[in-house]
Length: 110
Image 1: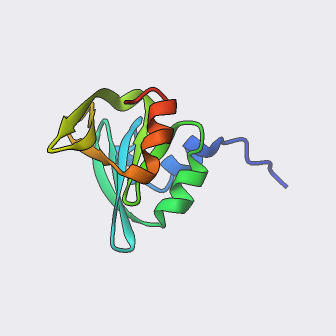
Image 2: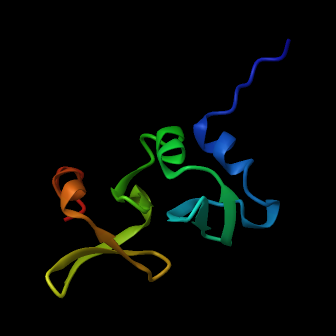
């Protein structure tokens, strides 16, 4: 029986359409789907955010109940109307919720 030598990143990438497979930027939960944003575009996949975050452990972190970010894609932190936000390499501002704020600070994002 063949052994699966792919790591978690490669396994996750196989869920995406070929044309958007590239380094991840962020993932946003939308109902039962995830909007996965990569350097080549975005795609909707049917998956829970908690499962995706577990699969991608070590490559990024969940910063909100609906948002996961790739560590290498954060460009800068920003405060907007009293809320912590992370500006991503695609220009999107991702909110950091109070419950994930300490972890985001410990990771050096804030």
